[in-house]
Amino acid sequence: MTTGTQAPQTPQVPQHADTFANRLVGRIRLNGMMALAAPLLAILFAGLVTSLVLIITGHPPIDSLLAMVEFAGMPRTMVGIINLASAYYLSAMAVALGFRMNLFNIGVDGQYRLAALCAAAVGGAVTLPKPLHIALIILVAVLVGAAWAGIAGVLKARRGVSEVISTIMLNTIATGLGAWLLTSWAVPVAGSNNIGTKPIGESGQVPGISLIPGAPNQVFGLFLLAVLVGIGFHLLLNKTRFGFDLRSTGLSEPAAVASGVNVKKMIVIAMLISGGMAGLVGMPQLLGSSYSYGLDFPPGFGFTGIAIALIGRNNPIGVAFGALLWSFLDVSQNILNFEKVSPEIVTIMQGVIVLAVVIAYELVHRYRIVAEQRRVSRELSASARTEGAAA
Image (tube, rainbow, N blue to C red; front, side, top):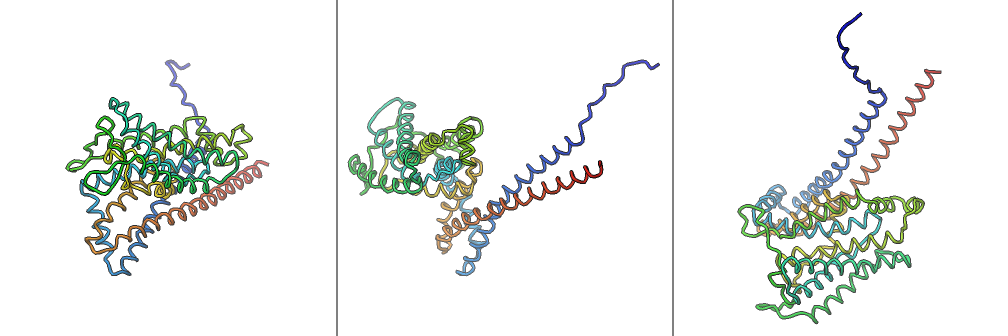
C-alpha cells in the first residue's frame, strides 16, 4: 500500500491532433512566406530592369538609386512622401473594396475630384465651430463621392451595365461637370492666373503634425484619416456579416446567392462605400494645404490607386507599403534631374513593378495550387497504406 498523494496525470494529446496542428502551422507559414515573396520578387525584378535601362542610357544604376534614397531620407522629403502616400492610400483602399467583390471601380479619379470641389465650395461658403466645420466638409465629400459611384452601382444592379464602362464614362462627365461648376463658383486667386473656390476659413482647416524631427514642413493632420480608413476597412471586411457577404460574393456569386445574399443590393452598397471612401482622397490636401479647389488641385490619384491596390493585394497593410513605395518613387524622382538622369526612369520602374507584381502573384497562386495537390496526394497515399496494413 502506498501513501501520499499521487501526482495528477498530464492529459495526453493524440498524435494525430499534434500532427494536424503542425501541418496547419506549416501551411500558414508557407502561405505567409509566399505572399511576402511575390511583391519582393517583383520589386527586385523592377530594380533589375531599371538598372539595365540606366546602363543602356549611360548612367550608373547604383549611384542613381542611391541618390534617390539619400534624397528621400531628408526630413522635408520624408514629409512629402507621407503626405502624398496618404492620398494614394485612400484612393487604393477605395479601389480595393470594389476589388474584393470583383467590382472594378475605375471612377475613383472623377469621384474624388468632384467630391473635393463640392466640399471646398461648401466649406468656403459657411462658417461653423471648428469640429463641425471640418465634419461638414468631410461629410459633403463622402456623400458626393458615394452618390457619383452609386450611379454605376445602380446601373450594374438594375441593367447589368459593366461598372468598368460606366465608371470610365462617369470620369469624363465628372471632368466636364467639375470644370463648369468651378467656373461658376470660382473666384480669382490673388497673385496668379489661377481660379479656385472661395477659401475655407480657419475653422475648417486641419493643422499639420510635426511628425518628422527637423522638417520645416508638417505632415497633413488628416494623415490620421488614412490610418482610420485602413482600420475600418479591416474591421468591415473581417468582423462583420456585411464583410463576409461581400467577400463571399467576390469569391463565388452563385454560392453567395445560394446562401441567401442579395447580390444586387450588395453591388449598390459596395459601390456606395467605395465612392464614399474615394471622396476622402482629396481631403488631406484640401484641409491641410490648399484650403481651396482650383485648377492646380492634384489630379490622377484615382488611377494611381488602382496600381497600388494591385501591389498591396487589396490588404490594408500591403496597400500601405505600396502607397509609401509609389510615393517614394514619385517624390524622389525630382533629384534625378540634378544627376542628369531622365525622371521618366521612375515611370518605367513603376510600370514594371505593377506588371511584375501581377505575374509574381499568379505564379505564387499556381505554385500554391500544385503544392496543395501534392499534399492531398501524399495524405491519400499514406491513408491507403495504413488501411492496407490494418487489413
